[in-house]
Length: 312
Ligand SMILES: NC(=O)c1ccc[n+]([C@@H]2O[C@H](COP(=O)([O-])OP(=O)(O)OC[C@H]3O[C@@H](n4cnc5c(N)ncnc54)[C@H](OP(=O)(O)O)[C@@H]3O)[C@@H](O)[C@H]2O)c1
Image (cartoon, rainbow, N blue to C red; front, side):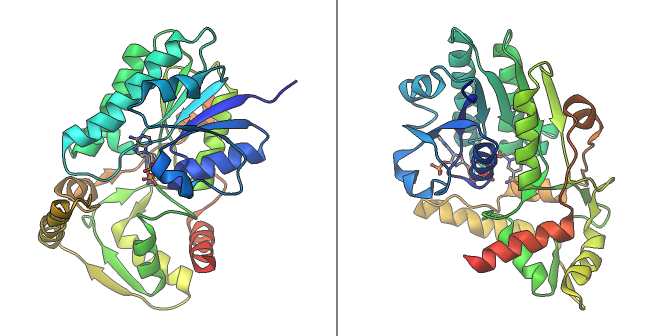
């Protein structure tokens, strides 16, 4: 019997690349949607069939889905300023894929990589777009076997967004970006990839939105970060509280980069997310539904992430 053929979006990004690598190692055949200008960012060691095009290209999406058993939709816009930019990719792109999947003679199992941010859609245009994408899937995906995974902040080898912060921690400086009482969950990227595999092979679990984290109940507090960094480094660290006004000022300055065509990571919406006190999630539902448990805890995950960053 031939192994299942899975369509993937977002493989040239951090999370999609690791999902592709994991699924390939587990014997799945892969077909990936890749924008022509991003071909150089394909995960080199992963055998996959390439389908050139973007989420706006209906023809490319139809070829991507032709005859596949599953679809992992991981592509997404994570940087930007305007709601219209996020919606055009995160919402409209998801809607196109769902409509095409429904038209397929044998509709694929569909896994959407959403975000815990979707739990608080009022905080930022990004959060709102991830929430709307979930809603679109629920509305348009009737009859499809779909599942939404809502990861919290994800880190691991190949990450570009959290790496500067993790490197700063490893050097002994701990920026406190969130409120004193704020708590957040984390997830190592390969644990997310294992959850995606479980989601693909359990088609009977459908129509659900599942959160997942690294197994630390109650998540991490911003105030606990110095102790975690000290345990990781084996030495003292300096705590650097960054008040909200300083983050807002930095986001204001970063917005100027939009004038030269860059999309800043730090925006007022991102500051709203950082200052929100409760980004803790719960593994009960996913543990029961998919029999998934995380394997990599924070200190080990940090070693793997920073070790791989040193090696590149
Ligand atoms: N990183 C996290 O902590 C985190 C947490 C929760 C959820 N998520 C979600 O996980 C997903 C992946 O995030 P990431 O951190 O891996 O982001 P990333 O590194 O920026 O990767 C984004 C991927 O999406 C692709 N993409 C963006 N716009 C596209 C378009 N119009 N057409 C086709 N492909 C497009 C990118 O392709 P190009 O290479 O061509 O740009 C890239 O492959 C996103 O949906 C994000 O919302 C991330």
